[in-house]
Image (cartoon, rainbow, N blue to C red; front, side, top):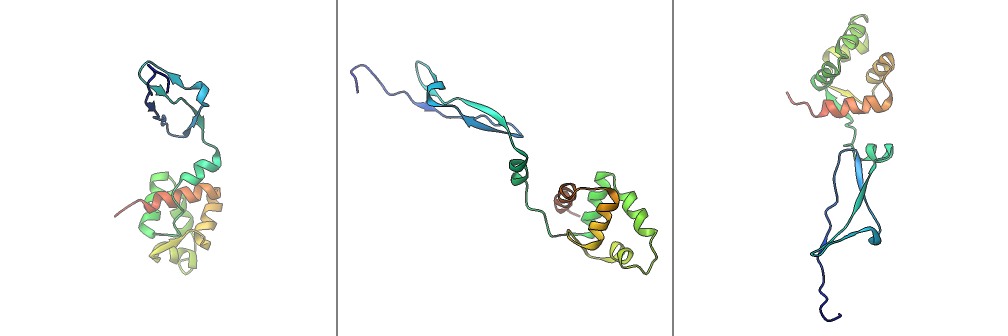
Amino acid sequence: MCPGWRLLPVLDDPPAEAGRRAERLPVDEWSIGGDAVAVTYRLVDLTPAEIEAAKPPVPVTVTNFQARAALLAAGLFDQVNDALLALPANSTARQAWEYANELTRNGTLVNSMAETLGLASAQLNDLFRQAAMIEA
């Protein structure tokens, strides 16, 4: 160490913003002040893959109540309910809608309704994630 020189503390406080990640800039772009050296960052948008990876896993099942509540919140309940109640009372799909304790993400009823509504797989996954967070 040279006489009269002193080590400066390094301040490393990456910024945070929803939908973006902090990317550290090279050392030669850090800010050197009289009392400290500040690490500098740039915010970059998350890629679609990073956004998807940050989401919680898709639940395999949700309760019938959770499914109905999520559909209500998404403004889809009436469409689903009307379509299923239009089926014969002895159809498996209608019986499942009215009496199943749980609905399965990869089940026939769920996927046929998603197709009827024009929901993409990612939209259905998000609907299941939302449903799983609902408590009675």
